[in-house]
Amino acid sequence: MSVREVEAYVRDINAEEVKPNKTKPEKKRDPIIHDLEHQISVKLGTKVTIQNKKLTIRYTDTADLNRILEILNCLDEG
Image 1 (cartoon, rainbow, N blue to C red):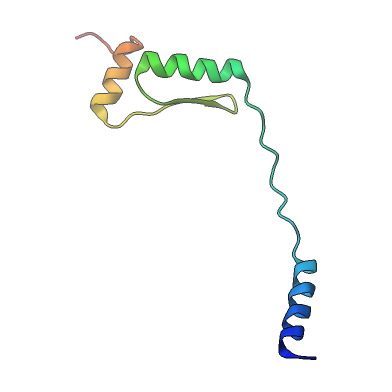
Image 2 (image 1 turned 135 degrees about the vertical axis):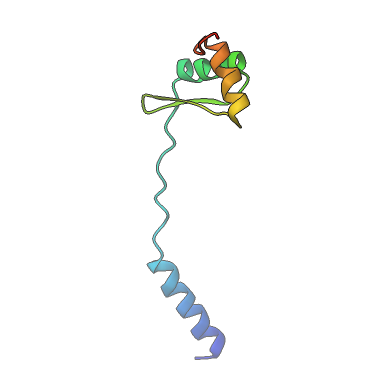
């Protein structure tokens, strides 16, 4: 056997041992949830995600958080 034949043989053996990647099938997102994320994001002016029964609102700093809280009418007036 030549060196090239041995290399090809080893490549073939290794290819058989390699298991195909079993990636998780991508879950289809509920279009209603996706639409709600979009509507809330537009209203608050920031990224909003809804996953696993959890609503996440992203903000960059304290001023941004205060702006969002004002929109949600969550700040005490004073």
